[in-house]
Length: 299
Ligand code: 6CS
Ligand code: FE
Image (tube, rainbow, N blue to C red; front, side, top):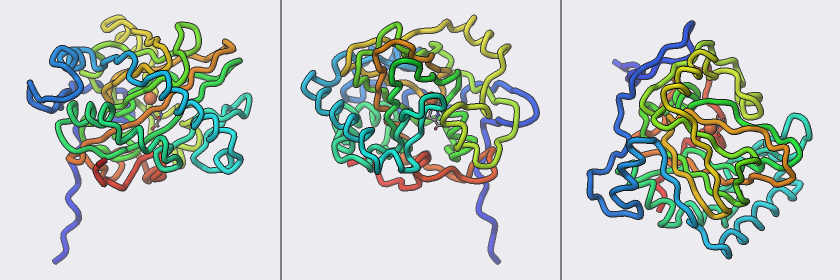
């Protein structure tokens, strides 16, 4: 007798009729205290409390030049521009994001394997890790649009089928992240509450959501409550600096109307113990270049 595949319990309901908050039911830092790695004990404690950790000067000036040149090469390549993994800005048509850069580029594949990068991910997630998603957000000057408030985990749970909050992102600045050119904003401590959003996921949602997210967007009331409780922290830093942030942080970034691009590379590490299953609140899976289905650990 064949039995239906066991349905993974949905601990974080979202995209139903109404918005619903659920307290986090997962660890934030999964490795035991004192686990050796690039983060010191104080940094891990701060990550546990805030949901993020900033690392100045992760990359040297020379390394920044290498990765910046690779970013410029990718966005100038017509083949990359014509690839479905490239998302353009709605207004200007300039490249907004390029997904799966760790497969498109051996240079960015090397960044993923860098012990300063993957070592921190393993330390936070307490296990081997694989890349759930990688992207460069170019955010060129003169009007590039931002990313409205959201929790990444809300999307990765609803649409990519990540069961638990055992996923961490690192945003590495490839240009100076100023207080004026659309830097990353995070609400400190917001990672401890899951906000299930109202409204079902439309079919092929990703074709619009990567330009402007609708499904999975918190209400003004919920955002006001979060901001009043947690405050808002703007992350600035020279090119080469990095921000590690938990998958469930409420975050966003504004438009960039300055002449100075805010180009960052984002790598999303997921624990191999938290491999994607079926979407929890979407009719179909998203393409693998957005939500990986290759769970091979980073070596
Ligand atoms: O849907 C996603 O996976 C992407 N969307 C946003 C706004 N942030 C995370 C990720 O790049
Ligand atoms: Fe995001």
